[in-house]
Length: 127
Image (tube, rainbow, N blue to C red; front, side, top):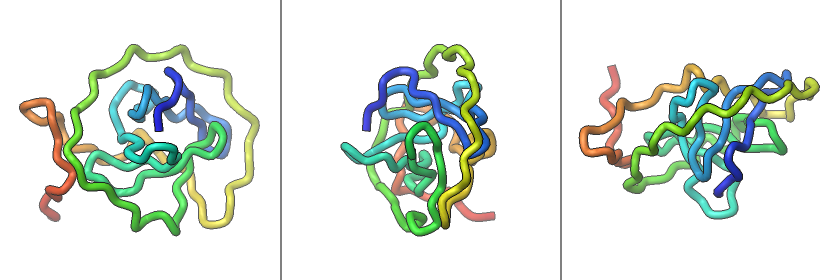
């Protein structure tokens, strides 16, 4: 899915948590947190290809039943976009059943690869 730039994302409390730039997802500090690999889908994945969350209106939420979603493909590490102006907050909204807010500041992201590419079918070793 490609979004107009910037497409602001909010949590259920109406706080700005990040933005989309095309098919890429960034937190409020411009740190890449994932992307939207499927055409026409509002589901995003982390750089390792595991499910991150879904866009619902202007909210970005994680749905428990979508946890098995994965993608395995080679992607280019995106350039950091210019930070957009902070948008006004949205009104609070009750979460859907089975949904939680996504904290884009704490998403574990692999460091930028040496050649500017990252492969999502290689898993990081577990501690």
